[in-house]
Image 1 (cartoon, helix red, strand yellow):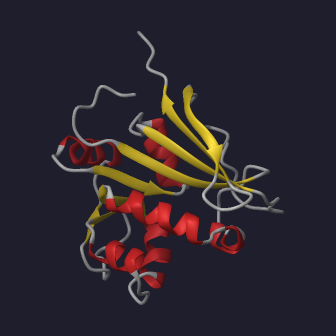
Image 2 (image 1 turned 45 degrees about the vertical axis):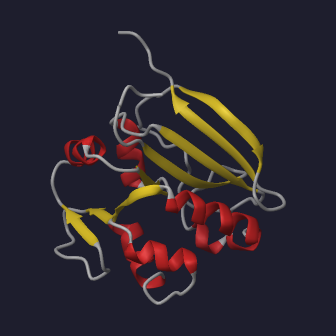
Length: 188
């Protein structure tokens, strides 16, 4: 656990059995039912904002503003922060575009008062947060499927990080497994 006294940054990642994290909408959906929906809504309701990179924003901003129901309603009204050097403005309500230094800007958000911040996925933005030591909790949902191609969770060129397992168990729907990790704090 970090020594941050304010908000934590919690990253949630869907991972296939063979370690793929990209395009989970194409392969994870059949495994998500009412249990996952309830858990996801409860986690979202505990958060004070969602952080995302441009690609996640583009996917979410097409899907969620038109959706209805408790999850969509909460997601649409909660504060959202998009980190992008190419996106000029956001069309999705309650969304702020941040084009500055990612690590510096995320640290500022974490130091502000409020509930924890959430990040979904582990693309370039997610990897940047891990490499900068900004992720306080990593929640992996293992989906029981082999995906033939895509971006792997483990990438070459990333910094080495040590994590401790704090919770492991069955997922919220059949076939899923959940693993929760926190960074190992090492003395320097």
